[in-house]
Image (cartoon, rainbow, N blue to C red; front, side, top):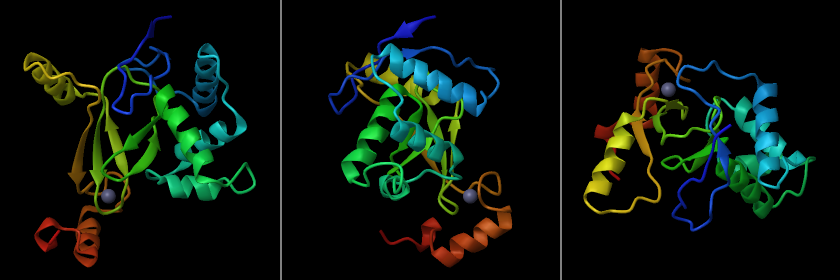
Length: 194
Ligand SMILES: [Zn+2]
């Protein structure tokens, strides 16, 4: 088992140790395997996958699209304290552990189906259905970090989110429906006046 110390993110908080258990062509782990791995990982860091943390991870794994902190908060009713700090603490923990990522352009969180990744990830974000997909082949991000390094810029955090139309591959039922939806919602770029 190999462990790595990841970079300190921009928040200044040190990330937790993570095992390298995701491989390029590895099959998607079962829910049970993923939860067990997260629990083991938490234990390695002297923490535990508490009921609330497990609930939030399950919620995000079940979700069809990235969820906002407030959606996570709303789900805590009956599980634990329904307070923003509780939701944020659970999310921060899962992000630090590497099982959840924040999709910055949506200000929302999604679970990584394959578990923690050793390499920076890139994401496709659909502007119509709000779903996002991670890309395991993140050569573009690695290249950006390398360029920054060559120019003497110390990278603390890097992510690449590509927004657009999933054309029926994620949540939109079909390509044409996604276009109609976009026109109705006014989310096509030419209609934007932001
Ligand atoms: Zn879509």
